[in-house]
Length: 282
Image (cartoon, rainbow, N blue to C red; front, side):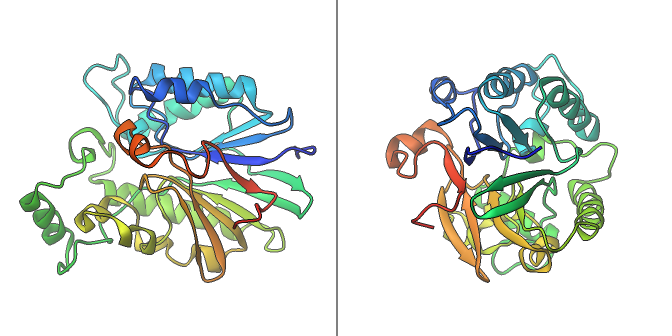
C-alpha cells in the first residue's frame, strides 16, 4: 500500500493516562485524507488507554504505524491486563492488528511521495544498559551509580522481561531478529526507520541526568543508520523533540512528553512532525 498526495507524520510519547495529555491526543488530526501517522511508542501504560488512543488515530489517518515504548510494556498493578514481557507485547500486537494498525511484526509498508518511494520499518529493540553512566564500565556499576543518585527508571519495577532472564537478554534477541530482517530488504529502497529508543547514544548527551541514558538504547544499533539505507530515523523516549543529523542522516525525536515538560517549552515544532516530504527546515 502506498500513499496518495498526503504527508507522512509522526508523534510519540502521548502518555494519554495523564489527564492533560488526553485532550492533546484528541486534537491530533490529519491535514489530508491521505496522511499517514507514525506513533513511536509510549502511548500509555494501561491496555485500555492504549486501545483508546490507537483506535482514535486509526479512525482519522489513512494508515497508522506503531512501535512499542517502555510504558506500553509496563505491567501496572491497576491494569486489568496483567500480562508481562513478551506476552504483553504479543497482546499489544494483536490489539493493533484488530484496529488495522501496523506493528514491528507486520510487513513493512511502502510510502510514495514527491521525493520517491520509501519503506517504513518500525522496529522494537529495547535497551541493554550499554549507554552506561559516565565513569562506569559494567551494567552493575552503572545501575549502582543511578541508584546512588536517586535516578532510576520505573522500568526496573514495572517492565518485566519474561520469559527472558533480563531486559538486556530480550534486547539482544530483538536486535538479532531485526537485523536479519533489515538485511533481507532491497538496499536500493530508502528506509524510514522507526524506533522508540534512539539508535545511537549521541541524542542522550543533552539529558539533564546522564545516568538515565542506560535505559535509552543499545550500542548494538549504533551503526544501523549507516549500515542500512536509512533516509530518516524517527524516535521518541527522551522527551526532547528536535531534529538532528548524524553521519548525514536526519534523526527526528517526535515526543509530546509529560505536561510539566510541554507546558514549559510549548510545542515549537507542532504536535505532529512532518517526516516526508522533507520539511524545509530539516
